[in-house]
Amino acid sequence: MTTTYTMASGGSVDIPTSTSSQTVAVAPSCGYKPGRTGAEAAEFIGGFGNEKANRAVAAMYPDWEDYVDDTTGRWWTKYCDESAFSDPDTYLEASAEFFASHPWHVWVPEGTEPPEPEVDPAALASTVWESVDIPAPSIDRNPTVGQSQATIVGFDTWVWATEETPTRVEIVATVGSTSVTVTAGSASLDLSAPDAEAECTGFGIPWTPSNDAKGTDCIIVFDRSSAHLGGTTPMEVEAVYSASWASTTGRSGTLNTVTTSSTVQIPVAEIQALNTSTRNP
Image (cartoon, rainbow, N blue to C red; front, top):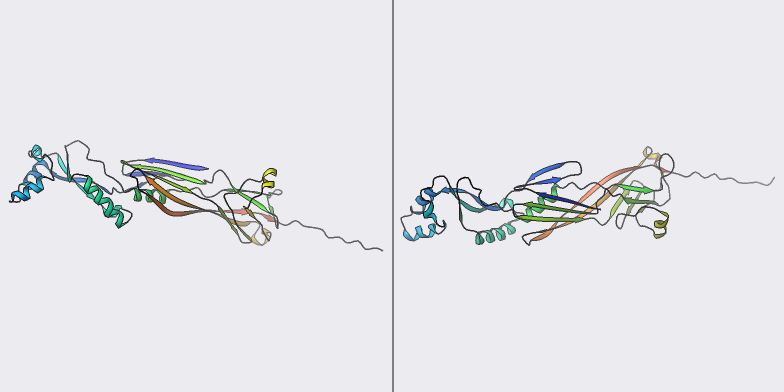
């Protein structure tokens, strides 16, 4: 089973969970912030008392002469926020690229939208991955004997994940012009109980007569009944998801693993055998 989440928003991402939805903020990494009005910029450019310095500053305000009398529109100034990046090296690389490819100032008339901010794709991927609530593993088993649906001491108990348990998770998140796709998968289930444990290759397969002939390694064998545990044996089921991400910027990477778990109460019964002996008179 693959669970796919798609999210899109400007500055925030809606993260689906197994029971509800939440919104998490994603800080812009680079963009433009409001600066001087046209009139303020003209005064600033001409205020150095040095023609060479004035020309250098003026070059940072393209066509500034067109806005010298404008007191409502503003020049927006480029910036990069180190705290919005996943690590210092990424900040240095991304900010250098942003500053080299964007003008220092952009004119924004009153009533119009400024340039859309950018986000660091690594930070976006990490935020999304940390916020997604992957459903805990749900399992079925065989045998299930009698009214209590018990398994039997010493017998192979087949275990398999139900359709509610995703083997693969894909999250597509978009903020502004940046999209990331986080892809995660789990290759096995770990089963652990007080009287037994097993590690499955894969998520197991349902027991059927035909599958019984094929076999499975997702089998757990209980050594004792549940009587000493109050009637049921708790079995913990874990699935470990490894994740990677790719983005529309061309950057990609890996993410921390996430472990999901659930506890299933299983009645474990003993088959009573009657020993008889016959004596000759």
